[in-house]
Length: 405
Image (spheres, rainbow, N blue to C red):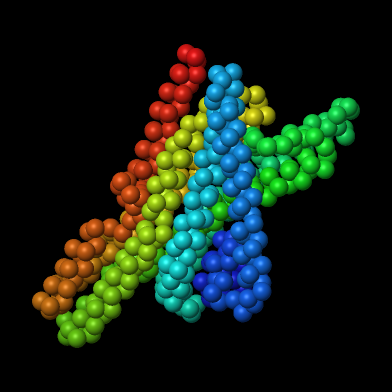
């Protein structure tokens, strides 16, 4: 579909959801499994998903054992610091997938309600300014997807590519059998080519699954918050442009009742988002602080090739936190705009009943919609600065402790 045809064709909700849905399906998670007409395909996808996560969690246990063994001796403490960010990333991926599976019914309900509210006609989509919201959403999705997949791909494939170049082109006598992740195995994973390559691609699948589980939870959040912000923006536009004709009191009140119900629906959707994401976002921010700290330490204490690899990881972690905070901030701003729009209309031309109802709408909009992890204030760009500040404090403490040791 070319650009002109795309602009002249209404965008469906499924098209907006395409990227996270397709990526999730690649690891066996089918968000729309309840609509599937092929039960065998759904069963095979579920088996593939469970088998993948069993394999992935065995690898995470191997990372934890490696970490435990490494911290026993100061000489190997740097290996523990090197594997710590990967453990954090893996645990967050695991928990995000578990949270989504545990609240799958609520997720399906949320997406179905958003699909029902989605403007269907091209004219309606122009009124909702859907194209502008979609452009921003696509840019964010493309950047974060690229970084997240670049991190997992680099960590996974770099050792094999490096060993292949050295062996095939630089004349080295042996092929270095190394892995991109530091994992303890109860067997010698490099004893033969067969065992090495089976283990290598097993790790590669685990890394891909972790990356997709980590990525898609945030991509879903981006799509959902974009839609909710679009609806808040539409409410603001309709409120501000309402003529408030003094001789049409009944029509004015009917319009305001519709707006209040619409606004209440958007606030309910925000609460669904909080029910789905609150705990995983809390773990995400806590782990992100530690990840950024450990990655920054690796960058300052390693060779150039390790620095390049970990810089991609650092950028991914920082962009991921910024992405969540940016959309949290956008949600707050969009919901607060409703009250401003209500005040900016010509309410003084309307009846007392209308003004009292409008006053209640303005009062309710003063408490903005937001995404809120437990014990955290509502997520905004201020939260991002706090996470970065906390990461730097951890980094300074770790670096001082390591130098003194």
